[in-house]
Structure formats: structure tokens, C-alpha cells
Length: 126
Image (cartoon, rainbow, N blue to C red):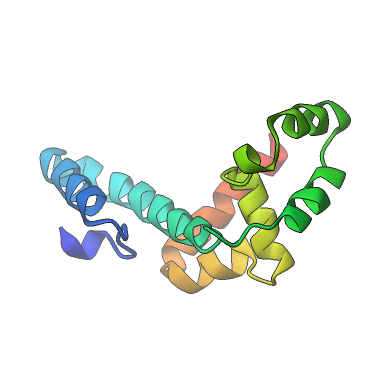
């Protein structure tokens, strides 16, 4: 099972839960679920790079690009609440040249990367 989860979740308790879930699935469903876990694990690892790194300057820059209604709502919540937002984290990382796509491509297998790109293209068409 271990080989199905590369990249693995960096937190052991979550990795073990993923392994247990895969073991309980019928063989015919394991590979698809394992792919979803791998994609989630890679995304989690990307987002963790921003923990503690999001600044108020990142926040202000991010606010400028939000639609007005959303910006007002986020401003009401304030920086402290917003700094855990996945959108703001990604914005901060990309401002530091740590792009999501480049990171994902570097950590995923070529097959998983191709699947990820196919999903992005499908969502863009929808």
C-alpha cells in the first residue's frame, strides 16, 4: 500500500488513515482513491510552505485583486482570520515565485500531473 501514496501525507496520523482506507477498499477502487490522496497530499505540502510566511503586505496585495463584495467581506474578517485562507496562502507563495503548477509538477508522478492538468482543463471548460 505504501507505494500507492507517494507523495505521502507529511502528518503520520493522516498517512496511516489513508493507508487504512485503501486497505479497506475493494482492489478495483484503490488506485483511483490513492490518486486522490496523492493529489491532496501534494496540495497540502504546497500550502504548508506558506504557514507563518503570509504578511500583511501579501494580504493588502491580495485584497486588491478580489471582487468588491468579497474584498469587503474579507476586510471585515481581518488579516488574522484571512491569513489561514488557502487563496491568500497561494497568492503569497506565488508572489515569492513558488507557483502551484511548478510545485505540483515537481512532486507528482508524470501520470498524476497529467491527470491534474486534465482536471484543470475540464474545470476551465465548465
